[in-house]
Length: 170
Image (cartoon, one colour):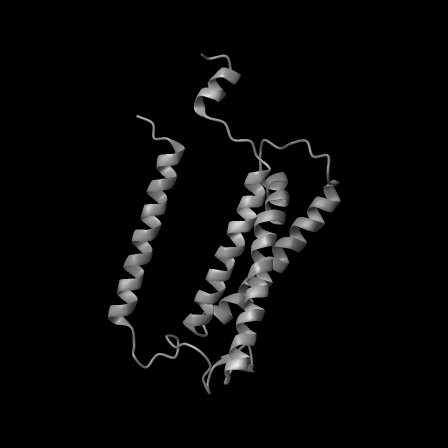
């Protein structure tokens, strides 16, 4: 018995939600009430990468800056990284005409290095305070809605019957 791709994806999404709910329940039940992580807004001891965030203007500035970084991160990961990744790591892609070997080597390693460096900094920001982590996640997801739409608009969608007609199966 084979399971369709759509059912596999739906099953995985349901699994992801179940895990997220389970983690959330565990955090709520076992969290330390004295934790500095589960706070919202500025605090006299909130320091993000050596910057004191002790006023609302600074906090909103941090959110805007975080939003800019997360928005750029999504655009880079969803639009640029697949172009490099699919050319380098796809074993079926053996003929490449839009990059030279050296260009692809330099660009791919430069992209992965900068992505890794930025990821380390973003982990530091995300573990500072939960509101910053959630703000970054929400901004990423909103930008992702648009980038996924851009990528989907470049594709043609047909029904199963149209595909069978195209392959002369019917």
